[in-house]
Length: 353
Ligand code: ASP
Image (cartoon, rainbow, N blue to C red):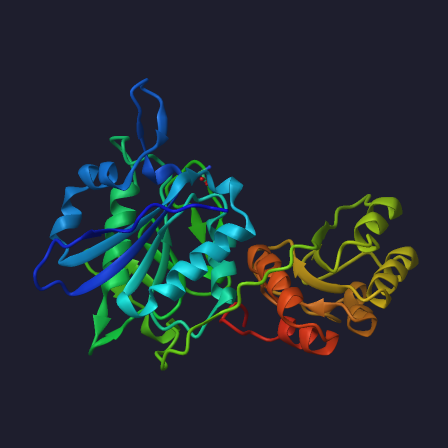
């Protein structure tokens, strides 16, 4: 079981404009030099000491930290379940939620949380950093401070952001549309198929027409996720043995097919027969493109024309990260094949156009 520390409260302002719950999971952002001079995850108190300006934001904070902060490459479904339940349990007490998370799997976690938390109408903002907070040129301060402002922001008594997002390097992105695209520079995240939700310059400019509109809360958690999924990424030279190992494996219930361009696959009989056999065995196959921009369009080329007939579901412009999270969500929550396919091809949390 993943343990969390006792929740700490920081009441900085008597008349604070909001109260935000920070969930500190780990990642580069929260690293500081330990007694041996090595970078290691540090406590939130140390983070606060590095960014004293947080105390002046007119935002009161509560912080809950993982007992052992993790590198996000170690994130698992249990971590998502913990995050979802922390948000659900504390939903009414806070105006917004800020999750400090490593960048490597942030887009997966943000996608997963978007599916697991239905009916959220408050900001759930993920952020992290490319350089530790202890590093003089770190991007952590800017990411942390602006994320907190966004998590606390409201207009006419209502939160401005009402969904799961990633804030990083001046831009706010829909969580299930974002991808980590850069490991060296500060602009680590992009959203190729959906516009930026807000840009932070001198002020935070919200792009109102792209924001999810406010609706009454009816938060529900769908904690179950089924990880019996596999990925078949196409490449010229893929052979039948490898493809059938993935498509026909007994334990696999859902497959993400990473195809070429607008959803194209090899037009060879053995490959199409394998897809058919896999679907006949009751597996779900979701087709997403290896291209970051554009979308899957079954039938645009001869090489994708058979896919609808075979029963492969088009993932339109889903990111790979959102596709894996949605497949786990669908497999765990819908047991009838027709409903599962319908859910996969419908946008349920703004994840596709
Ligand atoms: N490996 C780190 C992580 O994802 C990288 C980062 O935080 O930027 O936890």
